[in-house]
Length: 294
Image 1 (tube, rainbow, N blue to C red):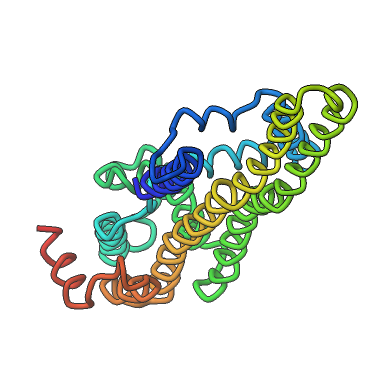
Image 2: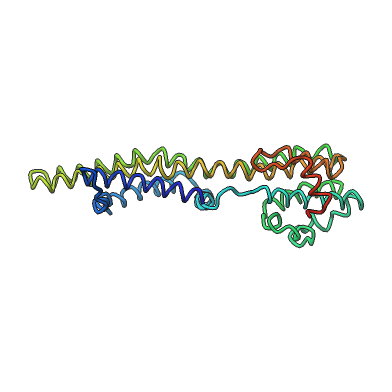
């Protein structure tokens, strides 16, 4: 929602400023805004932008660009309530493992999608990557393939891979944002060439309109870079860090539990991965878990 509000402020400020300049003497001429939009400039800019993306990145990364770009419209991916649910899920799972031994976790980690325990926590269960990450972390402990102190590098490596996968679309968006001002200049040069070849020597108003059309390409190139694509890339990067923090909470808690810490303490270790805006107090977490979320 904040992203949408931000774009309204950006487009509103530019539109009002342009209308005031076009109206003169304190009046506003909103009808003049239509003079900024020229199909040929958008075709040139769009062709260079999308063509550049196709050349620089494989299809899987381009799909990630679309997904992460649209994801910025949803706001922060996780709230404090989402983390409370996660801690409740882990605490119940760890309690089960403490009472019945690691083998008691087998039905949940071997087939996490069908786990009745995980299904009790819809936000967590609906996050396929998080469920898979937790299950993959516990599987080698449950079946005895590794010792608890060998778990940390495995989960750290998976986290590193997730971080790399998220960062690639952000790199593409950032490079496109950096390129857009230059694309705008190219579009403007094309417009000037058209003026010089076909309109020079004609009516002064026609020549002026041709030059204004060319300059609109430069405007939209710079505007698209610093007011649209650049901010979206930065927001997507923040969302990526938030998603990785969610995974770090799982990693720290699972490793702590596997190494023998009590369920409550294991969750406390995970709590300390959180930033202040979503971190509940230690006492609040203890109350939440011991009361069963009530």
